[in-house]
Amino acid sequence: MPEQGLDNRVNIGKSVSIHKKALDQLLAMTDRRNLADGRTPTIVPFFSIIKNSRDTVRSPGVLTPSFCLILQGAKKLYLGQAIYHYSAGDYLASLIDMPASAQVIGASEESPYIGLRIDFTTQEIASVVMEAEIVTEPKEKELSAGAFIGKSDAELLDLFFRLLKLIDKPKEARFLSELIKKEMIFNLLSGEYGHLFFQKSLFDQRSDGVGKAIQWIKDNYARSFTVEELAKSCNMSTSGLHHKFKAITTMGPLQYQKQLRLQEARRLMLSGPVGATTAALTVGYESPSQFNREYRRLFGLPPLQDVKGMRKSSCAGGFEDC
Image 1 (tube, helix red, strand yellow):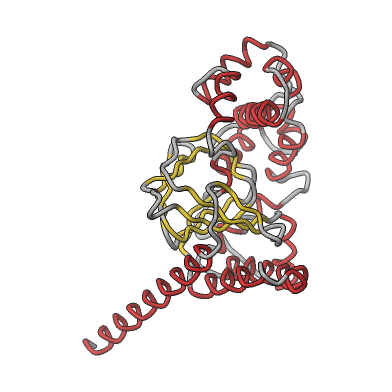
Image 2: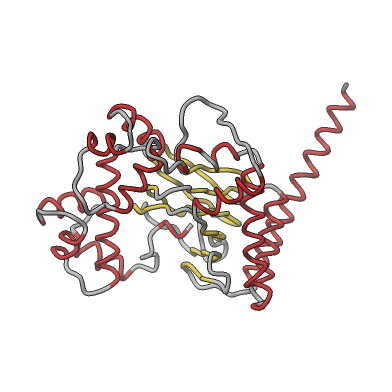
């Protein structure tokens, strides 16, 4: 029995060593590219590299469906009332648009934060589930949040290695990158966190699914509605919708809508000559003063002052990059 315990420790040690070697190899491949701070797109449309040479302040934003692996450095994620720390070898997966906030910690010129980001759609995940006939069952009775932190394995890191190599091969990248992406989704669905990566309630767009309610708000965030009306349209009770909605998004439907409205207003003002009043009306606010109050409550500054500061900042894209 002691020998078996020793064998297990040796195997674990080898696994950790292989994992670290793979991370170091990926990091070396990104170092050779002399990246600037911020998000660097690649020739692969869904794949980008993120770098931060200094710490960032806590920044509210919206996580979009994506998978972000940290190669070096660490981040702190604020999701609802929970705070998560994650670092090299960990990843953040978001399955839906999730209002949250985050910050880079411990970054420097000598040891910058480096992350690799994969964008995907819920349709792509559902397609892999159907094609591969994957069956995932929840480990707990309660619903889980639509974003979570996981730990990568050697197989997943190898897929990133293959993807990074394709950046220098435009002809091969157009075809092979999509295959690697499907394999990556399959890896995530089949692994330890598969039950979190595919939650039926998020992908169910039928009339009785909370996923439909979330999608409706995303598509109609500028429209006014009541929770009762939304619940009725989804064939759910008001209390049932509110409970499931909060379990997945960490907030109620109306708060979720408010966050999406404010984030979109901020994006509009950052992307062009759009004033605060125009942005407020565009996203559905009837009262500019209410918009100003709620904007300041979320972002910490009045709209124009916040946008001015964001434009001067190198991290104006927000934390949703990775």
